[in-house]
Image (cartoon, rainbow, N blue to C red; front, side):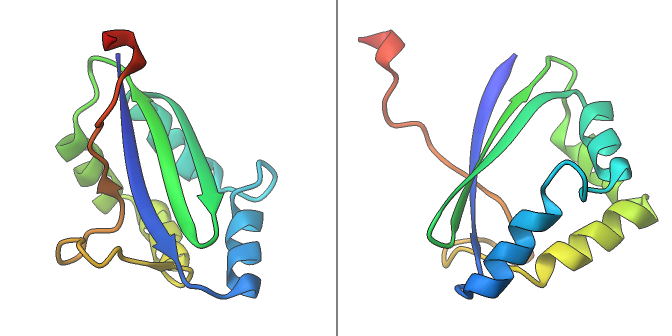
Amino acid sequence: MSWQCLALDLRDDPALIAEYERWHRAEFIWPEVVDSIRAAGILDMQIFRTGNRLVMLMRAGPAFDPAAKAAADAASARVQAWETLMSTFQQPLPWAGDGQKWVPMQRIFDLAGC
């Protein structure tokens, strides 16, 4: 199992940020989105926010394949609708590639190695 850490910015608008957070509450998130995350072999996912910066911690099992997850998401109309909705709140980091939303972060310190 491995942890991944990814970052993304939200549009710097308090009303949009509040709405984004509302969509991520358990009672509002679409079950198909949660199902797609679990079906891909993602064991745990948490999103944290400071200001308009988001950080996602994702723990994936050994069978997780990012390319397979992307293909499955592309084939799901419901997941695509969710991504379109979320794009109204999100903005790419300045160094993100074309079409890239969540950008992987590089680990620069690990207490376990000290």
